[in-house]
Length: 116
Image (cartoon, rainbow, N blue to C red; front, side, top):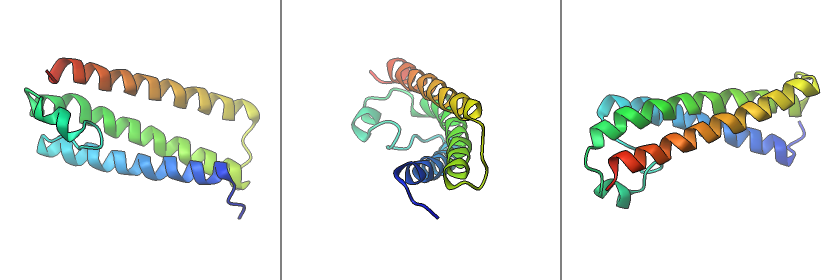
């Protein structure tokens, strides 16, 4: 198996996605926010951690699930296990960027709403 930069990048995206799904679900259930999402310093300024968790952590799990899908598609394509048409690769890349932008906006909104 060729371990090119893009193959490693796809693996990292997939593993990060799995971690985000895990912390998204775990923190949603506990009413917490993982310091990977919002720094510990910012969390001390948070007026409603449970509200922040309820708003942000489900979105984190959804973003993580998308990352797993994008990482798997890229890995399968880069290793030659599945040969996706160029159009599919472009659609996945554009979708990944759009999902990332939407998630970034959600983080900014959460910080603006809950951290003072």
